[in-house]
Structures are given as structure tokens and as C-alpha cells.
Image 1 (tube, rainbow, N blue to C red):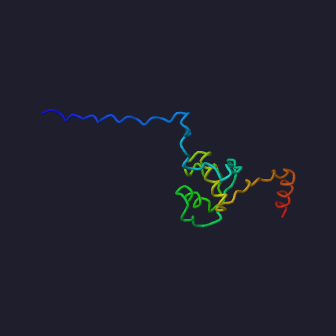
Image 2 (cartoon, one colour):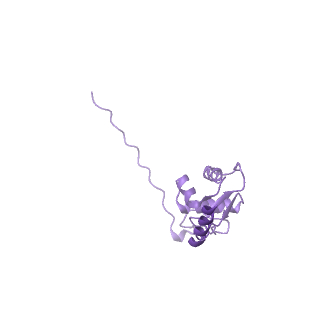
Image 3 (cartoon, rainbow, N blue to C red):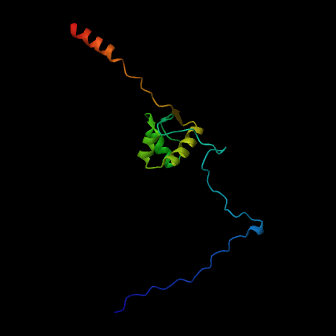
Length: 132
């Protein structure tokens, strides 16, 4: 018994690329927008905290945006969101810019811890408590 033979498909010629002199643009039209309407992105860094303003994502939200809104019920940094969603920082910047423009999330500066207390003050408090 002989094994079945694969038949080759007819070769379909590729369409000709437009020349620059044809009056048509050389690049195809973009079918998506990578930034906001004015082309700017939000000023975000890895430690910026993101908090959702709405509890439920709107029906028009993409799956990534809906997941991001659900994660942001509590403040999370952009780095944490990027890790949880397995997306690079650049993609997170685009998603967060869209959500910030739609006012679905709020960006906050990271919480800065105060400098450590003076050691002598802590020792004085500890000594005072031990005398009680």
C-alpha cells in the first residue's frame, strides 16, 4: 500500500505593491490608535499607584481593560499590574492612558514612607515604658 500523496495548490501571484508615483500612499491605513486622541500618553512610571473609580467595567471595555479595572479595586502599582496581566510596561501605558482619559481609573503618586525616627527618641520611650 502506498502512502497518500499531498497535492500542491496552485500558486497564487501576490498583488503588486503600489509604486510611489501612483499617487497612493505607500503605507496602509492604521486600523487602531496606540495613544489618546491627541497622541499623548499619561505620565506613568513603574511605582505609580492605580485605583479604579468604578466597580464594574463598562460593556465597551476590552478584556484587558476589564481585567485591569477588576484588579484595581485596591491600589496597585503599574509594575504589579503589568506582572499580573503578563503585559509589558509599554502596553500597560497604552491601556492606562485610555482608562485615565475615560476617567475610569485614577493615578496616584506612590506612598512615601517617612524617614526613620530618631534612635535616641525611641530609646527614651522604651526606657520610660520599662519604668512603668
